[in-house]
Image 1 (tube, rainbow, N blue to C red):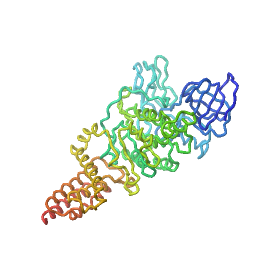
Image 2: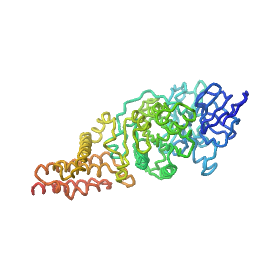
Image 3: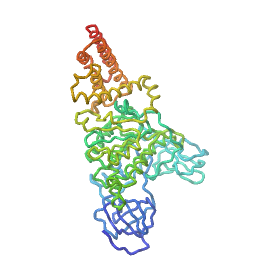
Length: 586
C-alpha cells in the first residue's frame, strides 16, 4: 500500500506498509531509534534511512494500520532495563513481562500494549559497599541487593563517567530511586538501560580453561564446552534439540541461565514455561527459576520481535557476567532468527544471498556469538557468557547456510542425528560427526580435577567408536562372525560405550545428571572389561564366552543408581572372577 503524503512540520506520517516493515516520511530520526507507529502506538525500530524516507521494522502485527497514520520518534534506541527483578522473569522478545501482559489483557496479547521490563514500584533492600569520598569508575560495584538466592550487584553503568561519591544511602528503594550521588551531581539509581545491539564493554577477554560441566556424559566426556565458549546443536525435527538445551539449562554449572525461545513452536515453549518454575535447583534445593531469565518468542509472534529477542537475551547475560557470574545462554533456535532476518530483508528489497538469506547473515551470526567469552569486567571481576545455539536445518541438511555459517564461528559442534533418535538412542548426538576445539585448552583441568587418566580414556573410547564405524561396513557385508576374534570383541566394547556411557535418560531422576567422578568410574569400568576381554582372547577364550559373562550384563544399571560405588565394585570383582575362570578353562 502506498499513498502520497504532503510534507508537514509535525510528526512523521506513514507512507508505505509491507508486513512488519513500514516506511514513514517527514520524520526526524537516526538509525535504531525506537518509534511509535500508527494510532495504536505500535513499537518499531528504525533500520534504514533513504533520503527523506525512514524504514521501520515494527515489533507487533501491522494488520489494519493505514498510510497517513502518525509516527512518533521516542529518540531512544531499543534497550533493556537492567536491575533487581530480572531473575524469575518471563519476557517476550522486546522485554515486556508476560505476567504483566496477562494481567492486563488475558491470554492473548493485544497490539500497542507496553509494560516496563522491571517492577518500578517494588522495594529492594540496598546495602552499600562504597563510602562517601570514594572515587568510582565505570562498572564498579557500589552495593548489593539480595534478589533471590543470587546476590544482585549494583554497578556504575559502563557508559557513566564515574567520580567521587558525595552521598550513598542504605535501606529500601525501588529501582528508579537514587541510591548514590556523585560530587558532579550525577545520580545513580539501581536501574540501568543498555541498547541491545551494543556489546557491554569489558577490560579484556581471557582464554577459557575451565569446562562448563553439563552432567551430560556425551558432552562432558567426549565433546566438552569451556565456560565462555560457543557451541551449536544442529539437528532435524524431532531429534532432541530442545530437550538437550533444556537439560543444559537445568544442569550446567553456570550461576545464571538465560533461555531464549526464539521462534519455537508454542507447545514447546509452553512446556518450558510450565516446567521451569517447578524445577528444583540441585545446588540449592530452591526453585531453578531463582537464577533463570526466560525469553519466550513463539513462531506465531511478529518476526521483528523474534529478530530482537536474541539481542535482548545476550544483553541480559552480559549484565550478569559483569557482576562476576558465569552465565549460560541457550538460543533455541538461531535458524528461526535467521528466517526472521530473511523476511525483513526481503521486505526491504535487499539483494538476497544464498537460499534467500541476506548477504550479511554470516556477519550477524558472528556478532552474536562474539558476545560470548570469559572476560575480566571493568570492575576486575571474572565472569563468562557461554552461548549454545540450536540450529534447525530444513530436512536435517547441514549444508544449508545457517548451519555452515554457524560452524565457521563456534568451537563445539554437537551434531544431532535423526537415525539415532529413531533407534531411541538419546541424546541423539552423532559421536562421529561432532567435535570440540576446546580439548587442548581443557586438558590440564581434566588431569587435575578428574584424573590423570581421563584424557587417555577419552581418546581410547573415541578410537574404539571410530574403529567400530570402519568394521560395521564389513559386518553389513559378511556378518560379525567373519571378523577376526579381537575385532569381534572391539564391536562388543563399542556397543558398551554407546549403550552404557553415551545413552542417558533425561527423564530418570538419577540418570538425568551424571557428575564427572561417576563418568570417570563408568568409563574406567568399560576399559577394565576391555583389557580383561583382550587378555582372555589372547589366552584362547572364545569371543562368545567373553561376550556372555554375567557381570557385564549388570553394568548398564549403574547409571540409574545414586550410590553406585558398592554396586560397581561388586560388578568389577565378579567380572575379574569370571575371567579368571574362563582363562583357567582355556
